[in-house]
Amino acid sequence: MLKISEAEYERIKAASKANKNNRVAKRLEVLELRYARKNNAEIAEKTGFNKLYVTTLIQTYKKQGLEEYIRIKQTSHRRNMSEEEEAKVLAQCEEEAEAGKVLTAETVRRKLEEQLGRETSTNYVYRVMERNGWRR
Image (cartoon, rainbow, N blue to C red; front, side, top):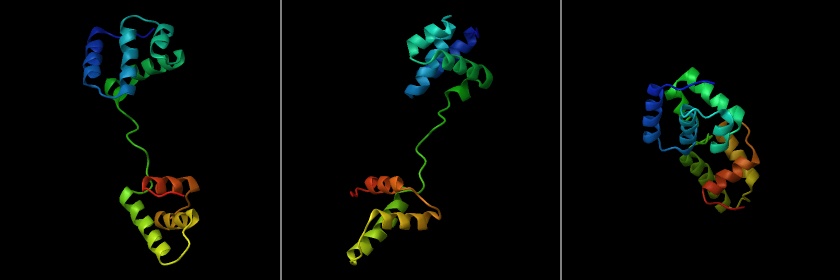
């Protein structure tokens, strides 16, 4: 069983106080419970994590250190284009629709693909339209 020293525990508590992210708080709770000499089953029961994941979290902390352990690895959703670029493409589509052309999701998809330089899914098109207040 990997143990956490008093000095490590003080750093964990300080990080816990400064933290505002719920996911990071849950991971820090695992370390605090380990310091309190709880085993993996007890920690898993208290946190709702799987016992094997508890082991992985503690090993990750020991290998990488506190800074890497609490770093938020996913900061946002990956976007193909900025909101402004999406709005610009949709504005072009809207101009064509006002000129009398039939506007479909496929038309919007072709415009987006032209802008991106690669193929996209229909789901992406519908998400772009929804983000910009368009409906089917």
